[in-house]
Amino acid sequence: MVRILVVDDDPYTLKLFERLFRSKAVDLKLASKAIEAWRYFREGEFNLILMDQRLPDGRGLEIIKEMREERPLQVAILMTGFADVSDAIRAVREGLFDYLCKPFKNLDALEAVIEKALEFDRAYREINRLREALDQRKACSTLIGRSAGMETMMGQMRQIAPLDTTVLFEGESGTGKSMIAKHLHDLSREEKKAFLVVNCGGLSESLLESALFGYERGAFTGAIKTTPGYFEKADHGTLFLDEISNMSEKMQCSLLQVLQEKTFSRLGSAEMHSSDFRLICATNKRLADEVEAGHFREDLFYRINVITIEIPPLRERGEDIILLALHFLGQFNDRFGKKVGPFSPEAIEALKGFSWPGNVRQLQHVIERMVALHPGGPISAIHIEQIGQVIKKQKKERRKDKEISPYQEEREAFESDYLRRLLIRAGGNVSEAARISGIPRQNLYVRMKRWGILPILRSFSPKFFE
Image (cartoon, one colour):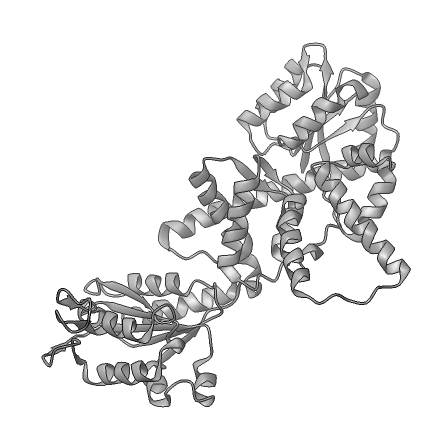
């Protein structure tokens, strides 16, 4: 059952809320003084607190601030007169859910704000549940994810981890192939100690050859000392060749020979060395297609295509997006020494609604940018929108100019853009947006609902990214 605490010294206001919640499944507590509010607060948790600014024994903003110090995710609404509006706006930017001006002129609007506040509470509790699940996962795994695709992949990895068989990971750029390969190595037998990574796409043919095979002193200009290569260093360990599809034909031939004979020689030497290592490869392309196109050796493909594991893209891992976002939020808060968060319900929907073409890496960079630019406190739809506007602008810059649209389309585009900029200016607060624009608050709700850009009502849509 939903628990709500209303604190106001005006008997009429208390009776109004009593009537408002009478027919609903709400455990309502009413208090007329701060001391009573504190007594209720310490007796149990509330999904929502509605607090009057001026009480006989305290000021509502200060009381809410103290309560949120004890329960940082407490959702609260301040009820205030016109004289205290500026303080309320500042408090909203610091984490207060919203404020309501008394007397209440529209009960439908009042109920809408309360329902949205309760949605925030539900979202915060879900975030806590996800964070606990994330903590449990981190305790036993370096990978974050509980979607069906990730569970399937993890099951495959647990099966093949103890084996010495070659593994090929195929997945889009940014899906975390290096981390997943390292996790597979960590699950393997104890004697598999070394884990060496070579990015085949980041090295020229000559540098890749010297890195893999090693070289003798004087083998080429700059070879001032004998240096063992990755084949040698990976003996009894794991060698991970990332982006193997970018390997030249010559290097593909050399690699095939090493895999078949398990011997090699350093550059500049005829002495043969043996090495027994496990090979893990990864590519952001389908190697079968590369073979068909004549870009990859068929015999090498069959040699490394023993077990192929598909890494699902982030857009197919809806359940994992928020887990990953929470992980990165904590990571960058710690790195930057900030206290940004939690995510609002609209922010969560925006994150889940974006297609994430850059996968986990892109999500990581988005959260990093958001934490770096955020002053602190909850992350609302507006903050997600600002990131989306950057992406949208970049996409527009890559497009050619289009022909002029019909008048109605241009007018609609202007209104949609104006409302977005207005809400950013108002910090996501509809009351402040109404004051700046001169548009009545209820009319703003209607217009924002029409364009799917509400930062407070349920109809927020992540179309900013499209």
